[in-house]
Image (cartoon, rainbow, N blue to C red):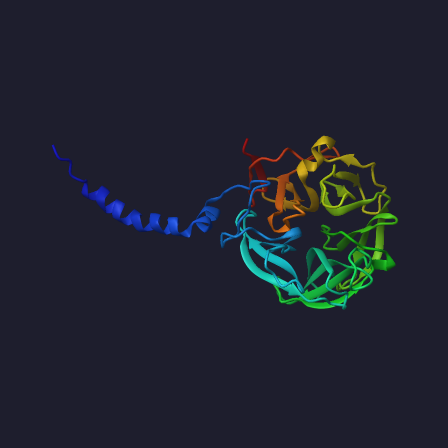
Length: 344
């Protein structure tokens, strides 16, 4: 007995065939769009199917869009320039490539000049996007090293640029290497920076965000990778030991006021795990209709292949003045409700 195709099934098959073919041709782009959760430590592709290049970065929210800025360490770039990757997302999972922002040596530092940890603020007063960056390099062009210890400032009319370099300086006259950003609930903006001789400084930006106006706190700990968040009446500040590219046990402290007094520093995760191979760069608070969540953003550095460095994003466990980073595992977030869920 010969079976005949059911007409409706045959019609459905003919309709699905082009769709399946398109998905196969799309390859990694289609797979990236199908992903519904965040997988810490795995390759994270953008809408083009290319690995996201936003290392040592930070997040800026404008309306319903999140902008992710970070160091672009792609292979094959012009060695005389330094690059910042800019991406946007509505759900923190799927990221659209916006622009590769290029900077030339702004002050004649020489071929070994350094641009790290870009962070972007939006100034409601000037309606400008203000990018801060760790700007560094040797004192002599033929040398290497971190001797200048400055911040650089660039501005733009759009979040994805182009950005115009404005100036560089040492904030309040202090050395500044790794930087972090923080915007408080009242809209005031702050820079977190590592001052190697003294410790960890938190300072408020000027009204136009183009300079640092006053120091708020000095935490006498030698930490870098600074990040800060205000959650349920407490400020949590987070940092990493000074161990170069090697991961270490990141620490956090709390205070009721930015000025302090600050608590003793505690381990974010079991010390033997060395923050699961990552280093802090940003704390992202997501406030929804049902919950408020704080997400740890960290970098898993690969110094011999920086272009392949990965990201460790995980929702933090907070309560009673304690903060804990769970072991990495796939997880999802609902931007509307603010709720997160682990996929064990």
